[in-house]
Length: 352
Image (cartoon, rainbow, N blue to C red; front, side, top):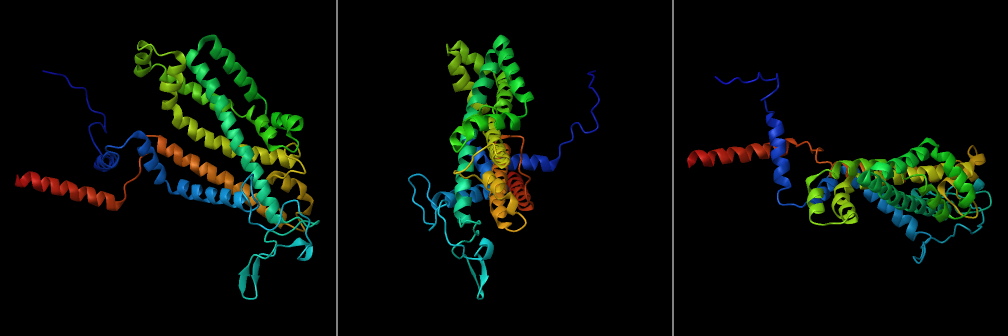
């Protein structure tokens, strides 16, 4: 007589809805590569797609409106031009007039000397986006390299790199950013972005290190080592592609925090300064006019919040797309179709 251990209360009981969900998921991704599966999941994330379109619209607006680099602009004013003040106090010309909606010549209003608010906000958004992208790229690169070296080689190199990382983490980022901003910030968003990148890579390094510590013990790494692959090839050709999901997701979150950090530093006067413009610098420069001319704060704040939220939602969508445990809950229509297919298959089996 064989002895069988007693079943747990829920052991051996399979939820039919879960089976249907798994069947639908497997049927949809059958024959697709991993990249196509990730892309399909990302495109189905409604919040991420809306955020991607909004962020793209913001980028196109700030790029084409006043021009950026070699791209010409269609807006009639520059952020440096001094124009006659149209409305009293520089109030926005955008609104309902004569029974219709009009933008007017200065839709975002003007400051006390006649600068066009729309041109200022567009230029500030350009500089803030530059800082965000440069910080995201450089910080991700530094964090990936440090985390990969620490996680793959371990030992003394791991201890040295991680102790240095812990030392950077213990110091408040805003304080380091303020010091570096004073030293190299000035009127250049590029130098400020490089300075912020030097203190923003720590979380990425720790996450990549954890991924490398896990992946270096997998069978495909042993197979590559037996085949004679060098350490560099194993790290960046075999292990790194398997950690790209974590890297991409955290890079988007890093970019969102970078634009908020740049805004905070510029607001405190340690970031981008005149004659250049950033969104935080605009809020700092016009903080004394909050009670009398609030439109000088509305638009810079709106663009800061919009960009940060869009990047965060895109990061959430990428996380759900790269995580295989994130399953889409089937709709009643999908469940009905699955039941119909099951019934047709049962009928064909009975008739045969």
